[in-house]
Amino acid sequence: MTSHTHSVTAAAARAPKLTRNQNLVLETLAKAEFPLSAYTILDQLREDGFRAPLQVYRALDKLLEYGLIHRLESLNAFIACAHPHHQEHGHLHGIAAFAICDQCGLASEFSEPEIEDCVQHWTQKNHFHPSKTTLEIRGLCASCAHN
Image 1 (spheres, rainbow, N blue to C red):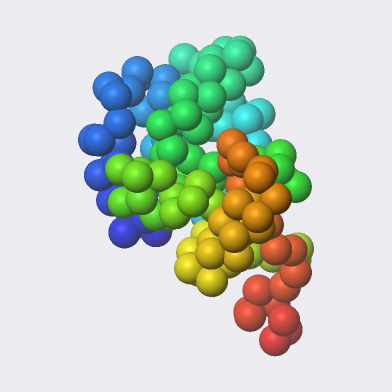
Image 2: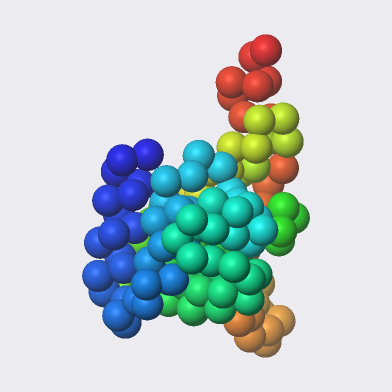
């Protein structure tokens, strides 16, 4: 997790100046082993002065806009971006891909040029203009599959 946190910190340095709340939410997600819901983030930040869900949602919205975090739709949860070096140009073709373990909850972000090329080809062929693409693969991670 240390390199993950370091990468998020480097990406945050390229984003517009983050507010105190945005920094706290980003740090919480960077330290988390698994994706977190907004209410879990709120619970973890109560001692830092967070009192209302709106405080968390405002921070999450900006962090999403800056490309520092992702929302995993199937989990209704958030995760720090594991590839923030893509922040300068966005993820290739705007694609974020995740393998999510149904048993332990591990979410691994990955990037595969073949998938990105396929999606880009389809969208161009069909004159579709995506605003965001998040691929979520659900199943069992290697560790859970062996148990």
